[in-house]
Length: 301
Image (cartoon, rainbow, N blue to C red; front, side, top):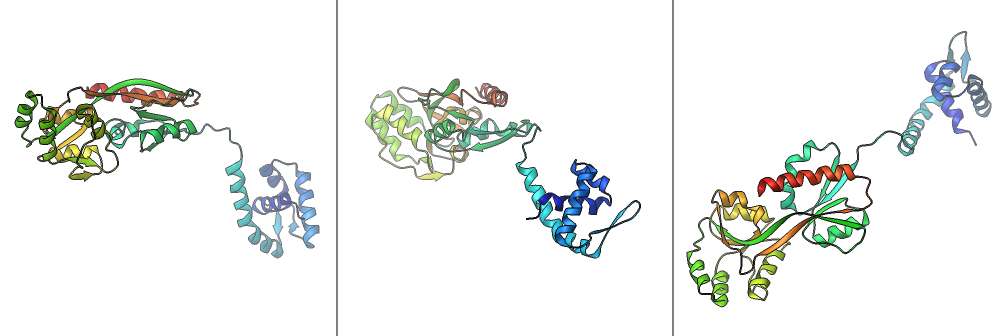
């Protein structure tokens, strides 16, 4: 079998025109380059270069051989570089899991400032915790704590799940019923209204109803929209009700685009946590993202 280095030396001689130049490119000795060429010529059975005083001129057969070899050799060299261990410092890539609405309200505006690569993943909180443990995610923002001893949870903010309505929603009747302290009448009024929900996440509605009426809601939302931010925009355009975290609509509440209807008999509050593995090589990158979250949540509050 032909030694691959013979072909590499042949290519280097062809390009540089000298044994010395080929030896320098390949980091071998000139006698070594000469030996490779002699061995290849012996193998193919014909001379590949005409030796002159300063240059080595390729023969016609050498030109044919070069044209046949150059593309495969270049491909092999690309593969070699791809798999070769590099001493260069690569830009790290951090994978972060959170809900879509949290990303839009917090990290989205800072993405372009981060000095490293970021992959944002959306999903359900149990799935995020599982992917964090597996190493698929490096950081998650979640209201749910896992039980793994390898995961560090750090509280950084909170959210209150509230009942909000559109700016045209008449809440006076609701407030009158509320003073009667009659949960059944209160629930009946709520069920008669138009409701907004999201495609995949009804957790807020179910938990709010369980806490205040001790059962699951006996209705389904009339309008299913892509996400909670969509709900806020829809409510700002007219009537309707929805159960959402208060921090997602603080600006709209201040601008009176939506109305805070009710916090419930007992407020439903979630603590928000950062979750990351205790043993991580991305401490600095994760801390920078955490700082941006704290900054944004403080501004919202």
